[in-house]
Length: 142
Figure (cartoon, helix red, strand yellow):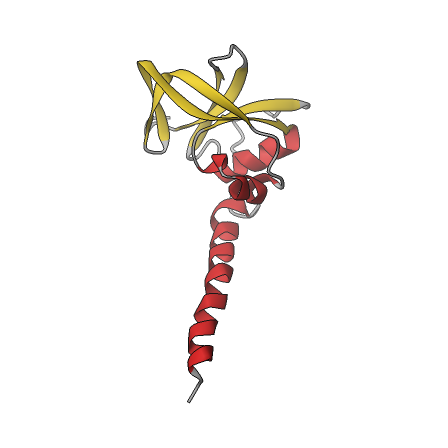
């Protein structure tokens, strides 16, 4: 009969491995996402990105594009959060972070968000007047 420590310890060890495998297979693996051909190529240089959901968390950023970066607090006026998306809303504002990423990191974030499949990337103007990309859910007809 296995010891009680073994019966408790094995699931505790297996859970992080299962979560890591799920992340890899569903969001991060280069084999589960192929960038749609109709998308414009990513310009070289640095890119500003406004994030308001999971990417506001440093561990998720590290997993998604390889570093936590130097995020700055940012606000997007004229929108409100609606689940996993943003909806136009006069008088509303969404708090988030402004990230500065390289073209390679933006490509990794596009893979994380499944650009062209689940999300599109739109250019927006933040409350401080600077522009940034933001991921928005694709409509059913997109």
